[in-house]
Image (cartoon, rainbow, N blue to C red; front, side, top):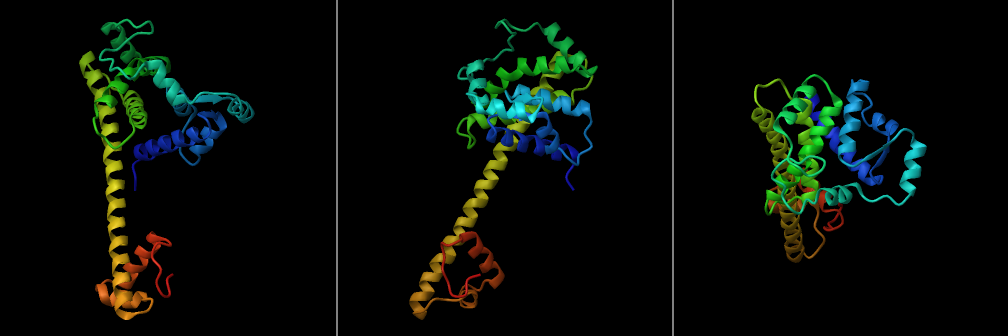
Length: 258
């Protein structure tokens, strides 16, 4: 059974994808419906709302307002967000609202306020670290995930790290936890992408192998072959052949295909 934390992260990821399909504009009721069946309280939903806003996803009070906003000319949240941050260049230091370097004491105070439960401080610190997320994503050279998607994963890792921050003595320790959360989220996304592609390649190899066997056997027998004939020829269980045929769709045509 998956841990509640993993389930929550998966729901947030799915919610971002859902928001993308709806022009990055959601009603609060839509968001609550997405987490139906989970033991979330109002404070948890407020945190989710804050996170979505940090992703440039607009939140409307009612579904009518959301639908009206979708019908208007609204730029995609991600492209707008990237433009705002000028993410093509890696901003190595945290910046304040006016572009100045953030004050370490102010940053540590924000951490203390977050630990005390301040939602405003959490949102403010998340905004400060968004350029860092962009810079870290840009450092992943030749990765198999578009940089925009990697930034989204990094933002999710940032937000989860901010939600779990604990009392510590130094600013460096707090910063290290956030950077670790961002990097872990990006690395996990890359590994999952590679896993899906490896699985896809393995399936393609099985389909091609079966397809070659079908053509070879048809030439030898001079008729359309059956699953049982393929099973005997390849010394492969009929059930496994049926599974490959289902994955191949209409690509392979044999006698009695199910």
